[in-house]
Image (cartoon, rainbow, N blue to C red; front, side):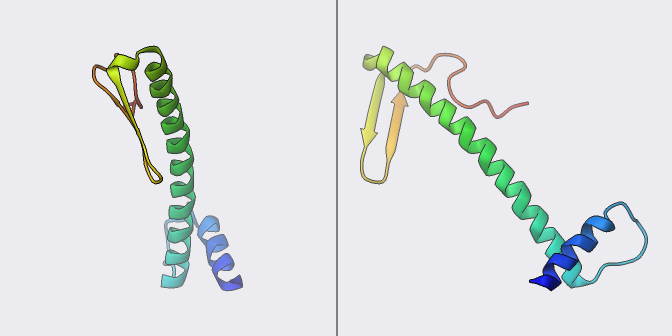
Length: 94
């Protein structure tokens, strides 16, 4: 584990150095570390956004029960809206 931590530290130290080469161990240790950090941030952002969207859909379902079908089971929770209003759901655009 110490070897991997040292490889990650060398990756950060050489982040803006554009000469020389890294060993395979250094490169892959740093690349996997960065991937895991980015993936963790992405999952956090997506869970917040999907939670917000599900809350909106649930609130809309309470206000318009004739336009909504809610299906629940042990492994699934689904809200289907026949004619969703504009702006409902996650906005993945920039």
